Length: 459
Image 1 (cartoon, one colour):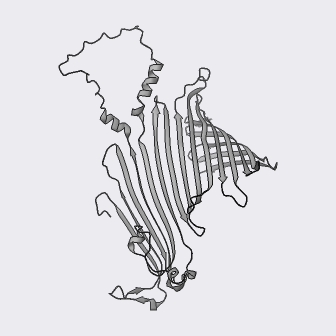
Image 2 (cartoon, helix red, strand yellow; image 1 turned 30 degrees about the vertical axis):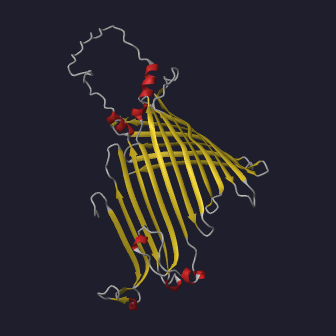
Image 3 (cartoon, helix red, strand yellow; image 1 turned 135 degrees about the vertical axis):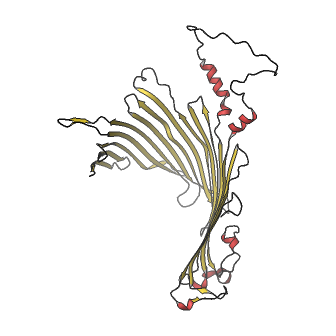
């Protein structure tokens, strides 16, 4: 439903009632006297959005959503009370196209349009066209480098942004239904009597949470083959429960990625490879949590992830595609509370290397059978071979003592796979796995051997 053009509104209402007792059913034209059984559950949802188009270089979208659920079942709630949960969230996201705005502020001359100081300037005489055999100027790599640097402002990707905030509440012991304004999320207080106001012993605990998130992302294209990405994101929230309010906050910065799609292949290797690309991604994050009343930070976790540290994709001239990926991560968690167990620091390091090769073959020619001649059909063969090695180690340091190893393991696996379709009616394939896992702390080893072959024939 659109009460206003471009602003859709959605509202739903549902109610579940127990109609098994005729005494609870009463028909009347007066809504206050009418009764349709005993209501056991009730729920509402409301949502809307708005995406204005104010500027061509700036996009934005606003959204809002709320949900309400209530349990007034007298068999589950004593004293005619009701339990409810409700949530609401709103957010804005969009993008800022800096390149589009820059091109509008600094318009470029049209193709073929002469550049002159005034409109009366005469056309410059044409230069002699180069004759055949005339040596042409070689491209200057230094000039191309500085040209690429100067053109960076025109190669900035649109800056995307997002912000959202959500609230969740759980209420118990209410004697009346809250107002519609509360149920749609525009009010945080129920403003209705509760059992806790009369007898706190009969009320049960309740909880709430509030969360905020913000993010920025963009990137730059360099020299036509290198794409970079940058990002920043943050989140914070407060949770109210039986143990008192607690806060949590986190920041991811920097978030950096690089994709080099046309890597120059060395002279000795270009006989084997036709194309190569490189990928790199790094992310640093810090998360903290603690007591909201005292503002004391009790736990802190710092992470550094290289995913991948190096990712290389290769295209062989014989049709094989291969990839090499190296991942590395380190997480350090600190318990800053003094007391039982003391302050501790836990460090987890993960490393991994994976090599994958794929080959696909298609034969549309068919085969020749004596007396029957050549039978034409389409056959396809796909083969892949994966090799991976992973290691993980977790160490812990207690205040006043050195680090001790909690766990340490490594795993090496080889997994070939293949599939083949002889025609649209005959398909087959195989899958194998060879994996060895070792617990370096206990010395325990685990071996996996797997082989599977399958075939499908359709009649």
